[in-house]
Length: 303
Length: 262
Image 1 (cartoon, each protein chain N blue to C red):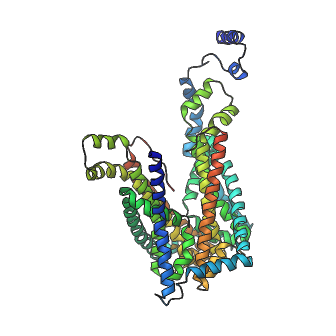
Image 2 (cartoon, rainbow over the protein chains, first blue to last red; image 1 turned 45 degrees about the vertical axis):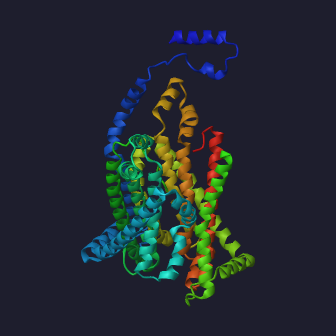
């Protein structure tokens, strides 16, 4: 240690123009680099062990406690914040009466139809643009310009064209799903692994062989990422559309509860919306991780 | 020679991009002029331009757009500020991450617009409710990406900092922040996009006051397709302008930190 300092001093003396930043650095590492990780581990071990089991629950439980005490003591009126027991009661009533199932299945059916339509079209469009540069040149600028208008911007337009019925929901949800799926599919075609393409060229593959044997297999994981993003977008727009114009569905349940000032109903429906979204997202994520296993590069997420 | 060829090629491509929009406009114009449909929804491009001009000239447009933008930007800045703080806390402190992270991850799964009814009951229908909602919309992507960026600083950079005996502060300022910057910017950029989307949504669902979303809803309620189309174009243009601005600022700051732009 002292020798290192001495050497540094010595060097400093020899080099007249040394800057301050050089002086700050020791001549060689004071400690081997591997020790860094080891010290971090022992310091964090106890905390990590406690944290893994208990800490994540602390915040929700505190909030729940505050909520409970707050409504019990009457800090807030019941209309502004219904007590947790009441929300739970409403939720279980919804489940036992079958209302929840009816509305959730209506929502799920909408989102499924819209998503399948949008994803199918999006994959076809992305495929066409990916395969043919000419089609891309013709279509992509227009597509890009239309993408700038968010789904919500299309809503009044679609409302005038299609009315309030089911087609409106299908069209908007399909539109929401279409954009990420198209972009990810196109991206997948653009960034096929270069090494494999070269191997294909060296073996004299025809264009069709290159596409079916190299490009499409390597495009599957990014396309799946597009599908997941598309589903997230579809679920988001489903809630908006149902909030604005519908007579059944989870979004309608929220809007209905708001109109009647039944916040317990609103909260119960929000919980269900969140839970369903979370479950579906987790499902997609699990499949995506499986598909991405063994891929050397993680692909960037496209918006 | 090759330069000539490439410029020729470039201009060729550009002309291809214009074909579809011009074709679409021509069909639209023809359809409206020849009266292919008797529906009142088929308005001519001329009518849309007229409506646009009257909106701009009467000052209604400026009132709506300035109200929307003011809301959008104040929500965006509040949300981004809070998001940066929360993201840094989540990224730097393991304890905080364990404490808040799982709750936050559950919270962000709830579809954004599902919050509107609760917010409208707690904060009313006015600007306060809208700004709260907008900052929520901007907050989520900023937190996620800030935290990810800080967490994913390459380990070898940190080891170099350790070897050079950087202080904690020096490591944070000199190594971690520049390394996390691209990710943080992705978050801010997404926050901008989301908050503009949320501005429109908030104006649809919390109907009160001026705003470009209200203009659209008005047009839809009165069956004025010209007004709706005008509003859509404005929404698209504003979104595009905000995107471009964000990219410019991002590039400037990255150059300041000596990061080559992506």
